Image (tube, rainbow, N blue to C red):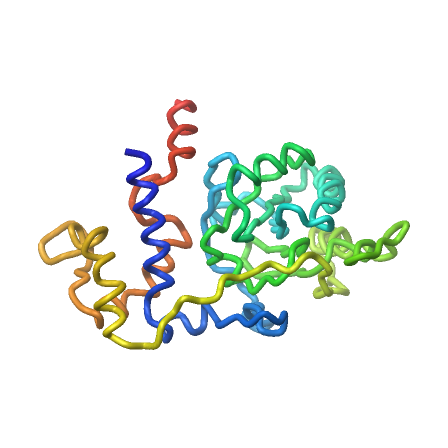
Length: 292
């Protein structure tokens, strides 16, 4: 049963990236091999993070906009094998201790396509990582945030979900180089200023982590023939039993035009894990059963 449901979730992720290119041209930009062509970053005038939900390495559910109990949320990108990400862990632990009691939440985000849950758990155990590591297997969250490298900190204000600092933790680590000690503690200073209600002097810094490989978008030309050959069969097998006239689904997946029109909503459902409408991950189901 769990395997069937898990395959259902995977197929929905596949479906979203197979929808026509024009639907996702803003949210899933084309990526070349160069860093300059990596996914876009949030624009300063609309620097708001949209809601998302992901499972961590232990199968626990985390949703951004449920953390209204926090004063700040720090999301740090990571990846197995990256020396800069590994050396960042003690720094993050020290910051978590320093801001203990001030309602600052620390998450890590792994969007590396080569990292699966088992390998993430193994590395977390080896390097004593005790933060929730959110697994962005479809790379939807990383793309929407426009991240390029590991060890990037994105600080979010839960009052309005805007970013108040984005960049490196400090200036100590670089690719192939390391200072004896940092001379600038960007993340610490930004958190201290933000929590004190003061102006943050440095809101953006360069990140020197390992490049994250984004899978080339498998988005075809905006051609209904591709929909008929590639997308419609998936819908027929996995979705139409509910999403058809007279059935429980709120809209019918009855045509190319109808599915294309709903595709942004479908993407949002995946980002916030509201579809399929049950916990599709067997690890999550296990934790829920044992917690009762």
